[in-house]
Amino acid sequence: MQIPIFTVDAFTNRSFSGNPAAVCLLEHDLNEDLHQKIATEMNLSETAFIRKLRSMDDFTKSSCFGLRWFTPAKEVPLCGHATLAAAAVLFHIQKNTNSVLTFVTLSGELKARQVEDHIVLDLPLYLTYPQVFQEVEELIKAAIGDMIVQDLCYSPDTKKLLVRLSDAYERSVLEELQVSAQNFLSAEKTGKVKGLILTLKGDSSGKHEGYDFYSRYFAPWVGVLEDPVTGSAHAVLSSYWSEQLGKKEMLAFQCSRRGGELKISLRNDGRVDIAGQIAVVLKGNLTF
Image (cartoon, rainbow, N blue to C red):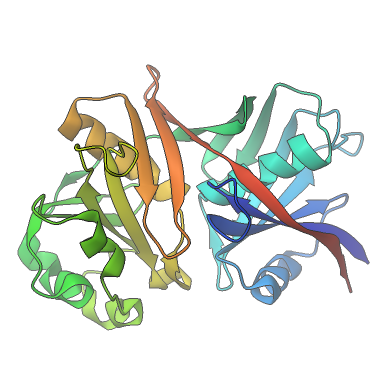
């Protein structure tokens, strides 16, 4: 059996930066266990599987597809960067002729469209609520030691904990922070955290291209120690920083080692548009 497969770096226009995702095009249904085996083999933070919803569908002409995402360890309910990568494969490699693509996923219908040199994802917007420090103190200590926390929030829909570092810190402090995410597993006692966001207010002096906020994201609970650039985390960060900054249009930078940029626009329908660029770095076939 042969399956076309691509590696796409998302939220960047340069190869070997941003967040890599593998994308598989499924002409026919795949045995359930093979999804996970392929994702484990690819060993990227996510492997996306695009499937036809009807036998007569066509990757070049159809506008609606099924989409699933797997880490090397398990299936996940939402992955922004792998959705961006999936849309890129359809738009740029399959030369799909539609202006908007719809993906049927575990998080409902997600839409992707091309706007100039970006692909725009229409994602759910997830609200955050104040989180009591004492309940997650051990986890925060494991992540940042004795650094000063400015704000602490939790997103129950996504099980993500958002830790805002003090505004007194520079971007370089977040970038250089040594984090041992494997230690989070034993430090997290509540059972309610499946992802940890560290975030920092942007540098208003404009030294770094006017970013509104910075972040890093860790998810050892789903087998990803640190994710390079995370669309789903920004579905949480967007609601938080929009409220904090009083802005609906924002530019964000995730300052992992690979790094990536996200353009954010809160919509009037309670969702969020997150736009990014892509670079295709690998085209081939899985053979088994």
